[in-house]
Structure formats: C-alpha cells, structure tokens
Image (cartoon, rainbow, N blue to C red; front, side, top):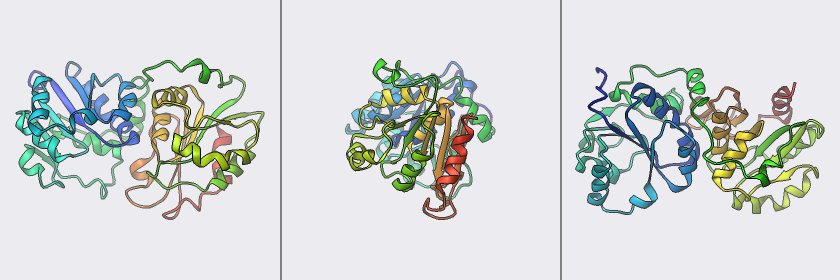
Length: 333
C-alpha cells in the first residue's frame, strides 16, 4: 500500500484503553508515526490513570479520556470525534462502541484486526493479527497494526528502545520530599515486587534474600507499590534491613514516573513500572515466565539499559536470588 499523503491525514487517534505497561509499549508507535508525519496531530484514547504516561511522551499531542467519554452514547462519542477532526483511528485495544462511533463519525481511515467480528462492519482497513499467537513483541505488533498508515517495516527491538531516548520525560518535576531521598554516592535501586495481578510474581522471600545480599554501602533501596500493596507490605517491610525505604502507597502515578526517571535502576516482574523504567533509560531488570503470551518474547522491557531473565516454566521459581544478584551487581561495577 502506498504512503498516505500527509494532506489527507490530519489527526490520528490511537485507541489504547488498557493498563500502564500496555500504554508505555504503545508510545513507540506514536513516535514512529510522528517521524513519518511530523505535521499530523496524534491523540491517545486512554484511561484516567494512564494519562501521566501519555503526558510523558512528546510525540502525543492530546489525551482523550475514555473514562469520560466511554459512558456516552455512540452518537455522542461520534460527535466528539467529529468535533476534534479525527480522520484516522487505530483500534490497538478494541472496543465495539468506540469502533461504531468512529464509523458513525465518518472517520476516513478505521484500522482494526480481523480477530474482532465487529471490525468487519466498523473498520475499512483490516489487519490479520493474533496478539497471543504472534512472535512479535507487543511494541512491534502495535506498529504492525498501523500498516495502512504507511508503515512499510517493523523496527527492530533495539531501534524501538532508542525511540524512547529523546521522547520520554515526566511531565512534572519530582517533588523535593522524594528527590531528597535519592543519593549521589550510592546506586538508587527501586524494587517493585508486585504486579497488581498483571503478571507472574517472584516470591517475596526471594526479594528479602536479595535485599539482604545487596551491600548497604553501594545500594540505596526503595520499595514502591500501590496503596493496596502497601497494606500487604506491613508484615514484609519489618523483615527488611533498616536502611530500606518504603515508598509504597505514597506517590501519585505522576510522582512515581518522575521518581523512576531520576533513580538508577529498577527490578520488577512484567508490570507497568518496569516498562516506565526501561523507557526512562535507567537500568531495568524484568522477571518473566516462559509461558506464551506473557513471556519476554512479547513483554520484555525495551530501553537502552533494559534486560530480563526468563524462567523455564509458568512460574518464576527457576529464577534464583543469585541470578538476579549477579545481574544487579553488574550495574555498579
């Protein structure tokens, strides 16, 4: 398919109304499209809590809040799309009523996958893509779906990692009460041990053992997590060395993104903060099971200092404390 003339496409809407990590891995698509069409407006349809991620990407011009427009009727959503002059939409995370509204609004180019039956009558460009069965990384799949917008090749993971370098920066300055916790004479390591149920999790006893192995004269360790996870940590935190700083439940997402951006490294399983850390360009280590569709092949963190360890089963049990310690120790050599 020939490249679409910039004059024909003025405003592209990317529909991505799922979780934080998914949105971080969607950003390279927006960066790619912005390079392809510098003068085109790019908007992201997302949920309220992922707005700080979208705001951190300079390739995205506008955020449209799904939590606000989602409850509206199809006609009302179509009217909003018309008002904003959207003339191309990519259904990266498909929702039937959004697809129907885009068609009703007369959006010229409506891209969806063949895996949703309703796309056959709501979209005018269909891409054969089964995310769970594809061998492409999630970020590559996102770009692949944009073929009708003139995407002629899918970049390598190494190339995509560098997309973040000049295009991802927190939208707020890190507040002093958190910035003052970071130190210049030690490696500031964030441990994000939980995944909000979105991925396999390493055993908490192994995190404890790892933290006790990491020398206090070289590492300053921070525990992050949600308010709900903070409650779970009340019996765990007292088991940790006194120098470990518990920041779980104390930050907004904007603040967490800024804190990660200013830290030196992060350890987590396949969860949103892992991908934020990779995009921020800090040392990042992700722990993954080998299971298809939730493994590193699809969800590995992408960044200039990002790496991962993959287990040999559906759990993370085969990933030892020593394996993780060796990787993280290399960061301070």
